Amino acid sequence: MKYGINTLDDFEFYRKTVLCRLDLNSPYNREDNKLRDVTRIEAAIPTIRELSDKGAKMVLISHQGGDLEYQNFISTELHSKVISSMLGKEIKFLDDVCGPEARRKIKDLREGDILLLDNVRYMAEEMTIFETKLKLTPEEQAKTIVVSKLSPIADIYVCDAFAAAHRSQPTLVGFEELLPSAMGRLFEKEYSILSKIMTSPGKPCIFLLGGAKIEDAFLMMPQVLKKGVADRILCAGLLAQVFMLASGIDIGAPSKELIYKKKLEPYISKAEDILSNYRDKIIMPVDYAYVDGGRVEIDTTSLPTKNLISDIGTKTISAYKGETLKAKTVLVNGPPGIFEEPDSELGTKELLSYITSTDSFSVIGGGDSVAAASKYKLNKKFSYVCTGGGAMVRFLSGEELPVVKALKKSAEKFK
Image (cartoon, rainbow, N blue to C red; front, top):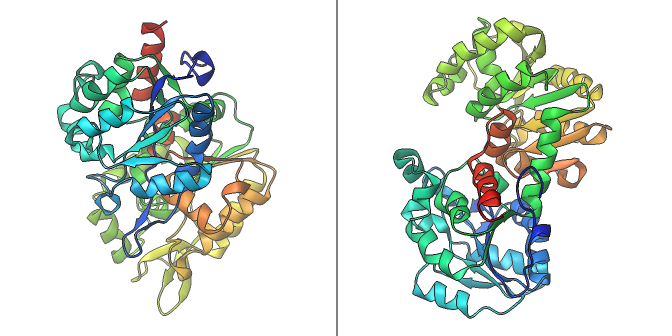
């Protein structure tokens, strides 16, 4: 047991039917019907292999896309093929979640067999709107259809979905009410690494925060600054532009319109509060880039610009490299620019490449960040790639994640 949670070392799995909740949620390209990045699937392989080698009768469950990211809302059949290829072993797939056929197939499993059920988000009770509107307790979620149908034919529940640990959904917190439960190897590893960053990071500790999901950054920043976890926060992406506005700098109509279109204006006042308390720890860009027939750079002293800001400039890249060079720990969440486009990828490409070339303990997390690292073939060069964006942010904000609570409760309940 670690952190009050059972691990795979605490159970005998031979001939046991194991429900293993993974987070295989991956970016998807509809044009060629392929998964664009399989980092999360690869990260789940050690747990799958270990349980199969130990003779478990494995039932894999995961979500893929959903109401908040409908562009990725597809079956998990593609995932079964990727897992089969990575394991070098047949993975059975069933286009059912918990119906009669699914339950029959589960009962027919033999030791070492692996069955992947279809996308659990096909069940309405697994959709985000169900979670946010009804706000059921774990005890109530144990009575939902998916949990009540699958739990009676299982012996053990294993959660290896750290990336979804901030969610309170039936397949994440309901099974722990009814079954002896453990965290998988990926969950254990991510929990351990983030715990170390929160309690005893190598100093100086630098956070590079970018991307468009600034809600996550503002959830995390007050805590890591107050607790002294982060010595400097290097701002990029929309986060930096919000801090510019909070500092009274006009960044230009197109960039402001984007911030208001995304309904991010409330974060301007939050940025003002952070600057009033931690101004010396918030580092902002000194230049930006936009695209106008090619990449064009502009110093912040020359703002506003009539063009949409899409990246940090070369002077900022150089300054941020200097900050990370001194660091013992670097955490990255969110790309500095629109890395998908050639004229606005320089900040992301240069900084991620540089961070992985230093001796610092480097951690990168969040879907877009991991996709960027994958694009530049840097995944293996980071000290650790965290599969969770939202979960990582909420963990670093000091919040005890719903799945962590559920696993701890199960460890006590099924001693």
